[in-house]
Amino acid sequence: MAQNQTSSPFSRDAYGDINDNVPIAYRAMGSVGIGMRNHKVICSAQPASYTACDSLTFMFDIAASAMWSRYTDASGMRNKANGNLEYIALQFPLYKRYIAFSAGVLPYSSVGYDIAIADSVNSDYHYTKSYVGEGGISQVYGGLGFNICDWVALGANFYYMFGDVQHARTLTFQETGLHSTIQDVILSVSSVRLRYGLQVFHTFGDHSFTVGGIFENKMKLNSEYVAIETQTDDSIPVYEGQFQTPMVYGAGASYTWANRLTIGFDYQRQCMASALYNGLDGSYSGLQDRSRYAFGVEYRHNPQGRRYVDRVMWRCGLSVADEYLRSIPDKAWLASIGVGFPLRNAGTIINTTLEYQHRGSQAAGLVDNSLRLTINASIAENWFFKRKL
Image (cartoon, rainbow, N blue to C red; front, side, top):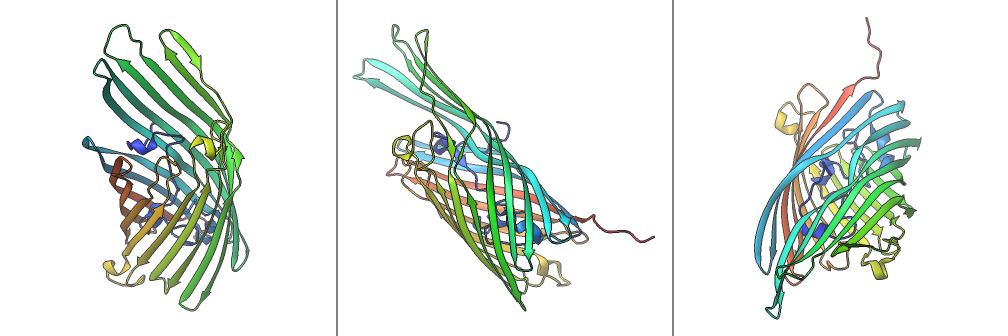
């Protein structure tokens, strides 16, 4: 709950806003990552990329963000600002350039909204409907990457998911003699899941190519679901069912020229419709499959240039994704730009990313336009070498 990162009404149902866990450097490129391979970036979305790290380097990555949102519906507009820590990750080699390890803390989903609607029945009974949600699901991960030969890498992540998601609905009448109704739903998660990754890569002179894929099997979500409806002084338990994490698969590709220009493309699908939510599949739970397409570009004029501006990394990207709730028929669009500032005498890079996201539509009843500014420090230090006396 301390790391809540949203105030959007779109987080009102199910698990809330789901995070794709792409590092800041790649979020500036439209949130690509499956086909990306860079020794300066920890990409937890693709465990096969861990072996791209230098065999002597310990890496640490921490990121924080601030977001400004404007919500528009038929009744008007509301502005909201919030922000918090995004993630913490580290990575280092275990055996030369063949085996590497990564670990960290990431968000899985975020919930945060507060909605009130006042109305009446035939001007006789006046009531207020309130919807309040908070919390989210976090995850600690540990992953290994293996180079099985000079051009193929495999990887796997183990996730421990934890946290609470709470949704509360209240119906309150102004007239005396009419009782209020309150429904609290709390989903407490303590579960594990796995992700597998594959990358095939090769360099021909100044030209480098990478093709990658990821896969997660559908798994039972170990959780405790408490739903209580209170009317007058009686508490009525609500049906409790089984929950599952969805099957996830995706593919991506990237091309790099002379370590100056990088172009990446990703496709990812989360099969939410076939995963159980409270014992129901998508036909009854209101969930649908989520597809996401991403495209991004990074350019720097000269990695070895004497001028500082020659080594600065300029990034931009675009992505489009379905919402996993059928009640939100419109696609979410995201455009991003970013700059990577390498420090002069260290392997550290300070990355800044600005993302603009558009969700919903006036026809659907709600529009969410947001700007998110994210800053991270990607620290790389040479730890694993013998010093000469």
